[in-house]
Every structure is written in C-alpha cells, then in structure tokens.
Image (cartoon, rainbow, N blue to C red; front, side, top):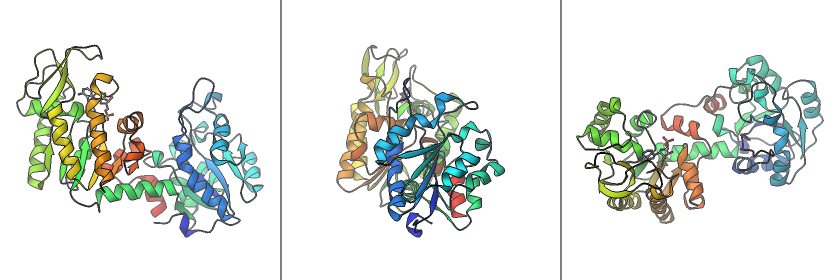
Length: 395
Ligand code: AMP
C-alpha cells in the first residue's frame, strides 16, 4: 500500500483528489470545515517536502456550471486552515488549469473548479481523466468520501500514473481503521448497528458476522427482529418482508458463535414527536398505538457491560431517534460507554451516516479512536466490498 512516505515531493506537483464537498450557508460560507481540516496533513506534508499541490474536488450535485456550486467560495476557508495562499483555476481542465499548474512553484497551491461541472467526472470518462492527469506528476487520493465511486478523479485518473500514485494520510488512516476492526482487531470484537432499517444494513450485518464476537442491534431495526420472534411491537417501525431474513441472521449468528444483543426494553411514545407521552416497556410488549423510539434503561445497562468488555468496537447507526431530545438518551449513553471503553484501551471506530452526526452533536468526537469521514464509502467497506478508488491505487 503506497502512501505519501513512499515519495519525495521535492519539486514535484501532486495532483490531489480531496473531499471538499462541504456545507455552505446562503452567503456561501463554510458551515462545517471538518473535511478541509482532515485534508490538511496531506497537503502540508507535500508542501514541506518542497512540492506543490493541485487540489481537485467536487461540491454538491450541480447540473452543469452553477455559481452556487463553485469551489471559489471556499478559498478563504482553505487559506485560513492551511495558512497558505490558494490560487484558482476556473475550469478543472483545459488551458487555464494547465498553465496555472505549470507555473506553480514549490510551496504553492492551486485549487481547481468543481469537477462535477463536467458530466464526464461522474461518468468516469477516460479522456476527461487524461486531461486531469496532465496537471500533476504524482496522483494522491485523499478522498475517502468518494472512494466508493468509480469517477474520473477518484479512480480512472490513477491509470495515468502507473508508478506515481499513492494514498493521502486521511485515506490511509481510514483504510487502516477499517482493517483494524475487520481483520486484526483485539478480541472481543463488537459491532453496534443501529439506525432505521434492516434493509439498508443487511449486507453489513451478513459480512460482519464473520468478523465479530458480539453484535448489538439497536434503533428502528430492533422491531423487525422482535416481531419476527413473536413480540408485540405496537406501531414501531418494522419491515415485515424482512422478518424471515431477521430470523436467518439470528440463526447464522448462533452457528458462527456471535452473541447478538437486542434491546430488552424501550422508551415507547404515543406519537412520533418530542411532545408525545412516553413510557418504558418490555420490547416484546409495546402497547397498541405506541412505538419504540429509544433503547430503555435495562438495555443500556446490558450494552454498557458488553461495550466495556470489548477491545475493538465498531459503531454505526444511532440507538434511537436522537434528533428528538426525548429519544436521544440511548445514543448518548452508548457514546458514553464507548468513550469509557476507549479510555480503558479499546479501539473504537465510528462511521457511516448518522452515527457521525450523533457523535459530533453530543461531543464524542475526541473520545473515540477514529471517526470516519465517509458515510457511503464506510458502509460499502463494512459490506466487504473493495472500493474502486482504493483498488485503483493498489493496482
Ligand atoms: P441510518 O441512516 O440507517 O443510520 O438511520 C438513522 C435514523 O434512524 C435516524 O434518523 C434515527 O432517527 C432513526 N431511528 C433510530 N431509531 C429509530 C426508531 N426506534 N424508530 C424510528 N427511527 C429510528
């Protein structure tokens, strides 16, 4: 696996695929700069080597060239974070970009306009990728968030750098963290899967059963399992057509010696609302008209014990409807347990969709070992897929 350390960037131009797909407010100001901050170590290392950086990214889902999706809006933020002036090419390919890239001196940075202003980017067009490849000597992929897409800048462009391509620091860290959990984590290994639906996590569950000793299943998924086992779930969210699959998963887990922990009690509500009346009840005895929206206290006690006995922990998906204050307790308590276990030496990886939002919202970011930056890419890795962006570098 080639990383930045395999190259000396002195007098070289690095063409870096970063993920600067950041949220902007109505004044085009960056409202969450995590992704830019995450790319900093790679950029600084190359500049300190005596190289220069050509940064390419997408922003949003533009239809053609739309000013609101221009990457020029984020230049002040990048300059702020890196402490280096950022030059800009108003088209990611073509004469202007080529001239500006050629004129770059060691220590300088050029940002290219939004890759997705060209539809060839998402189509993985080879001729477009070739044009991008002219802008650098060494290709560096540091965008985990798009590594599951075979786009021109994330995958196809690597073909034009057969020897000179590598992972950036961020992508390398993402790959190592996933490996640590999925391949060589200290035992016992625990996965906590929450979130809304079994259907969106099924491939993850199936793949993960071979890797873990314990599996906590929480959130809305719980009720498909509980109903399949004959429990009364009231109005709780449930995918009836997935009930046979839920039973199959339980059977497979038993055969593989994986201990599955489902909630034993829930916070039930008489409406999907923060103002609803609530009661704690047995997960198999939810009254008609009520729905389970969070894990109950007995469940949290059990989960806390399992989390604290585990040496490697993967967390994907909230334990309840954490967006509503009255149903956030399960997710917060689980975060506390994982933070404590991490403090005592466990390795914890949080990633994939809403768990990252929850971890940030409740301030656990610095209390777990690693928070993944890629939602879809993380999920596909957990499903056991080889991501095209990663394969292209390993090739
Ligand atoms: P996912 O994107 O699959 O990780 O799902 C995250 C969503 O699951 C969040 O928006 C939660 O509000 C939702 N969720 C978690 N627990 C429940 C539940 N018991 N009932 C309904 N939705 C839930």
